[in-house]
Image (cartoon, rainbow, N blue to C red):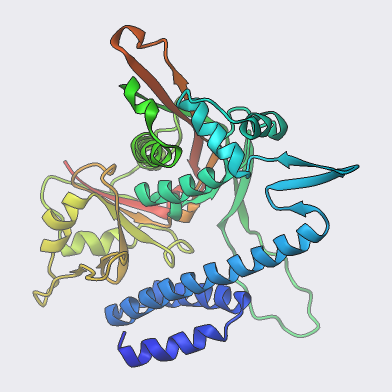
Length: 393
């Protein structure tokens, strides 16, 4: 984006309300998704960053206003204040800073202050991950496992049943005054339970001298990232038998939704693969492969005019495109494999945020402390006909 455009857009941003910012983000998302102009996509990506910064400013302003109003009534976000005679008693929640520091200090086996002890008791969140950390965790998981941003993901405790339109009937031209015939749309329902994902990291006992902030960052980077990567692996390879039902649970049939070959992928293979998702699932369809296949397979494909059909994006955070469609990259995807389909038709539920527990006993003789990350997740493909697959054997 040119400096002149950037200045003009900044001026426009300064006049926007939070509602207008959200509307602009939504409309730009649709425009980018349907565009094949890389320059336009790069410009919109930069504008999105500016919009998100403005959104954060406006949300912070609203939070401050709400907090000021709450203080007038004796109730501030995260910590409510009850007046008892001439005394003021602070009541803590899992969103309180005191609860956050208490949570991590207990993992570090450090002494809690009186306020932190009260925060643990009053919040009733004994062992529950702090709100601030939970939000950062979900954001981090989506960075590590980008498919979590592509599937339809919920965060509902326990078992959940969700439905989606499977085979929609077309709308039709209605003759005035005539009776309207109801559509025979087919709905698909999937019930999501929960499978446990865990990671144990033994560390030196000396790490318990870390500060709370440093420990939280280390915990997210080491334990949470590994669990998130394993969850993404389940979304791709899960068979649905004693494990989540990912793309690996779809029955693949050559000529219907599968191209199985012993040679490298060709232009004709890509064209055929793009016809495999059924009607109604093609508009949002994207490709998926690992980073190696991007360069050993896709980047080498040329059309009948000897032109490359894969375009790598030079802008950070903007995916490359194959035949104009986005290419999602995950190294949890098998080698020499390319999926194509509507990933919103995979329904997932993170029924329990990643929890963390500590044990000083399991590795006592080695002078180590064990930290265990733990999450509960399940997923299922609601519309198997939304996907096709290329596989070189």
